[in-house]
Image (cartoon, rainbow, N blue to C red; front, side, top):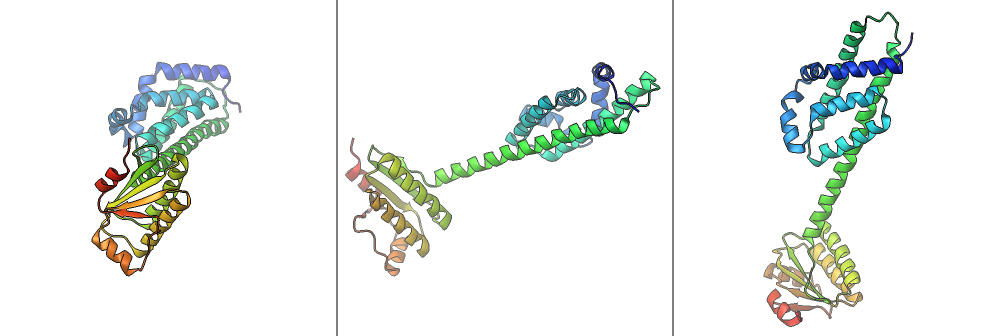
Length: 275
């Protein structure tokens, strides 16, 4: 029993390239679901499944593990970027695996070779490389997908706490919508970071877009204001609504003595905006 020699592998590659259309036709018969998605995947992600299948087979047969890994990583990033269903990728690669073995059978039959090849060893090598590609692809896909999700979360956090500089010492923090524990946690971190980095002297917090807030979150907001004061930044609260004011008074909460309140953001801008 023996494996194919390098010369025989090279001959198989030639056979594969000479019959590339037959390979494609056989592959499309194997990939029942994906064949109807080829044009859509090309349009959405600029991913040519058929061309990539031919490249994958060459990397596998020629034992180019480094190129195989790089190709898998590139594919993983492309599929993650365009949110393509990985079930299609899995079916496509498994169809490539089956088609490759069909082709190898045709090749050996045409050669009429009487040698007894160690097909178990060949199967192990080829299937291991297909599995290596799939494993590298899924790791790349998952890592890049996670990085996209984290970036989106970070973007949402930044949008939920937009601190807008007016000049070198004054910034505005307009809060809109619900104020919950998660948002106040982000709020505390960003407010203190910006005060430290920008050396803010005055932070105007506009609450005109906040219709209601829980008692716990009011306490947390007061702690943030106190933290800003400890860092030498004066806080101005504007736009407090009646429901919020009533809740503050009912809870008996006292603002920091250095904290100022004004009716509207416009009043604060007229008072603190200097050029």
